Length: 429
Image 1: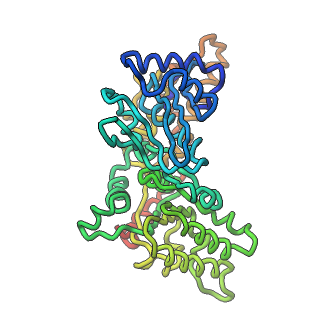
Image 2: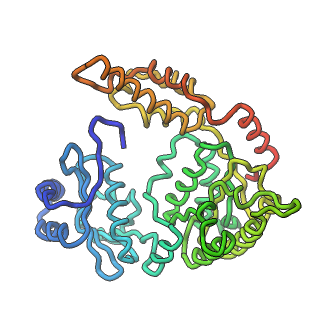
């Protein structure tokens, strides 16, 4: 959401939201003689079924209301009076609330003469016929819900891909190599492209590898399962057994993006006397990757900050289709990151060119730290001055530049140079 003085947040429906629902319903159906669902049906569904609302300044500015019938979910009412981001957040939240019911699809009927369906079509719904029947397939089917819970998986909000600003080269690479072949296999077949099964992301810490993995899952609309090596080590029977059991469960899912961050913890170089304590885990992981590759509809994404430390067998052809570098944010990405953290009221007078130039070599997390530090220091200064009307328009470029000077870069020049060498010697695009 934008950094406005007032923020929008999504929550479950409360009884005292009825007046806001009535207002939204009247605004949405002001020109209709016979809406699909009457106001009485909508209010009844708010109490008996599933409803979420968008709030701003204690006012209901949007609502999404759904009910379930067997494996079919229906949106009884969807209306906002704000923006596209609120539309997307409402639909995503309603879907997550209804997902445990095991729905096969989520559908909506709108009047045949209603052309205002862009909020639905841009969030995965498709117009099916002249009755303006729209539906989208639920990412997780009924039989898969318990399986997904067992491995700690979840369905991510849509639009995470669009939220990754800048980084055009990396996004284009992931789009061409992963998203299109997996999301549109018929197009891949036409060009003789085999959809990938596994990909390695490498780069300095804090450069957004996890963000890209999540964005790919969101873009594909597949469940996201993140495996944590540290948690596997706490399982009964040891890490290797836990890894094998987890991959066996994932194999029963129709679709999934499986993500292992800091994979070097369980895939480091083998050898030595005595053997490394993780050697058995590395062997099990190599076996699991080979078996994982035998099925369609799933993608394994591993990430590492230390690609040189990985076992040679782990990176060879036949296990990972691509070994892709994810580096520091480019100028466009840094500008987008700054725009995310600079309050809207301070943005018109902000020298973004100076901020972008001064933050070269910083990770997204570094920039976020500097932005938050600048805001905190400006607030503390205002409080010390005893100003009655404290406003964020007291923030200026100088505050952010000062915070940048106090920010230590996560990635050293040596690490950045080593990353460039790894691109030449290890990357497989």
